Length: 192
Image (cartoon, rainbow, N blue to C red; front, side, top):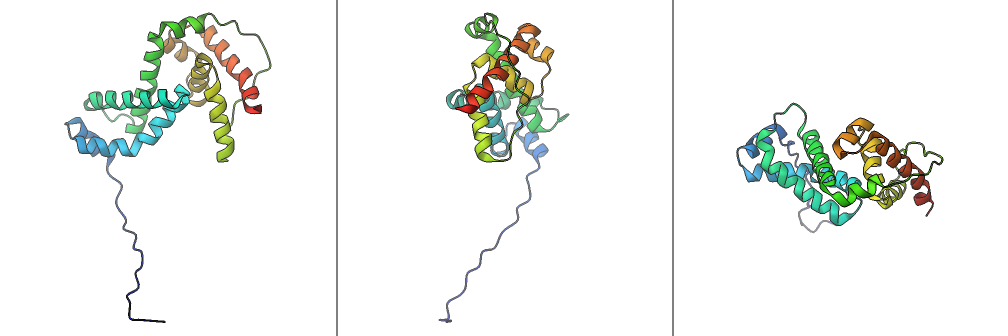
C-alpha cells in the first residue's frame, strides 16, 4: 500500500581511513585533535595489552592512561621506523616494565619464590571462541603478578628470557622459574 509517503533507505557513506603518519606528524607538532584521532584508533589495542600485563581492570586503566600521557609527551620523537601501533605497544610494555623494576616489594616477591618442579603446560593457544578466550584471559589474570608478567611477556608478547630478565632486572633463572610457575598454575585456574 503506497500512501504517497517517501521510502527511506539507509545509505552507507564510505569514509577513507585517516592517514596515521600524517596524524602522528600533526600530533607531534602539538595538534590535539590529531592526537585524539590516533588515540581513538589505537586505544582498544593498548588497553588489551595493559589488561594482559596488569591482570586487573583498574591497574590496566591506570597503565593505559599513563601510556597515552607518555605517548603525548614523546610523540614528536616518533620516527616512523615501525608502525605507530608497534611504537605504542613497545612504549606501553616498557612503561609497565619500568614500573615493575621500581617496585621493591614486587622484586622481593619475585626473588624469594621457591618454585617446585611440575608438569609444564604446553603453550596456550588462543582460541577463536570468545568464551574460551575469556577463560584464558581470566586464568592469566589470576596468576600471581610475577608469574603473570613473565608469562605474558614470553608466551604472548614473544620476549626472550634474556630480554625479560634485563627489563625486569632479575636473573634469567628467575624468569624461567616464574614461567614454569605460570605454566603449572594455568591448568588449575582453567579448571575452575
